[in-house]
Image 1 (cartoon, rainbow, N blue to C red):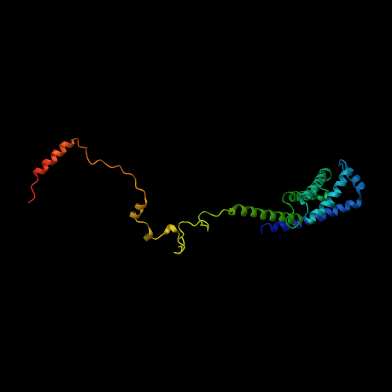
Image 2 (tube, rainbow, N blue to C red):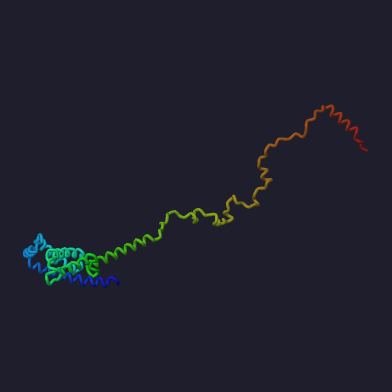
Length: 241
C-alpha cells in the first residue's frame, strides 16, 4: 500500500517526460541528420554529426521506452547524457532562465532522469510487471525450500520383518502350543501308568560285578586245634534230659 503513491507518481512523470522527449526526437527527425549535425557544429560541439544522430535516437527510442515503462533506467541514462551535453555546450553560458536560452529546462529534464535511474519507473509498466513476476516466483521457491527443510525425514520400510513380531514358521514361547489328540500323541508322551518301575528296570538292566568283601581275617589255627576246641565245647554243653 505504501508504494502505490510512488507508482502512480512515477507513471505520470514517466509518460509526461516520455511524450516530451519523443516529440523533440520527431522534430529532429524531420530536420534530418545532416542539417541537425550542422546546427550542432555551430555550438562548438565535438563530432557534431555523431552527436546529432545519438541525440535523435535517444529522444525517440528513450521517450518511447519511458512511456511503456520498459528498460526505464537504461533509457534514463541515455537521455541524461543528451541533457548534460546540451547544458555544457549550449545553455551554460546563457544563465538559468529559459527565456534567455538558459539551462533551467534541460537541467529539470536531467534531474528527472537521475530519479528514474535511482528509483526505477514504478510497478505500473512492463519493468514492474516483470519484476513482480520474478519476485513471486522467487518467494514461491523460497517457501518450497523452507518446507523441504522443515519436513520430517521418513525412512523407507525395509524388506526384513521386525524381530519383535512372531512368524508362523517359528512360534515364540509366549504362544500356547496346540494340544494334540490322545490318539495322535507321540510315544514319548506315554501315560505315567505305563512307565516301567524301578524293579522292572532293574531286571533288564545288567548288574555290575561287585567284588565280595572277605568276612573276616582267615584263622591261622590248624585243623587239630579246631577239633580240640569242638570236643571241649561238647563236653561243657549240658546233657539233654
